[in-house]
Length: 145
Image 1 (cartoon, one colour):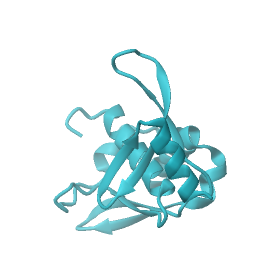
Image 2 (cartoon, one colour):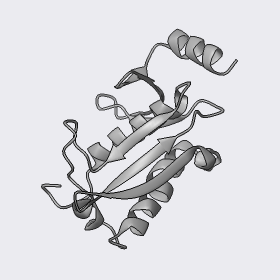
Image 3 (cartoon, rainbow, N blue to C red):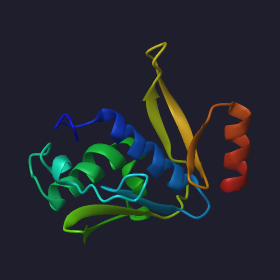
């Protein structure tokens, strides 16, 4: 928001959170344009970084350029994006149904520079990465029997 350009770190946070909700038993809801304290920031600054500077452009970016590109187009039916005006500002709500398969995302390791597939899960209000292969195996075995 401060730099008036796309923020790859925030995009990664959105991607990890969405994957975590898809991998959970219940799914979940992610609000974009609201800070952790519940203050409404809106999406106007986000819109300015896009070719199409409105809700439609933002939904296209989220769907095509970020989420389905990384998670797989087969998960489209489990991702529901809506927009709401709150305090005169646009807020994006992503409602996520539980995925029928593990939703992995590829992340570049900051130390080695190598890309690695990672599995994220939600526990309460926390998104966590499972690193240990046995943890991943056990989680997937229990979540998708």
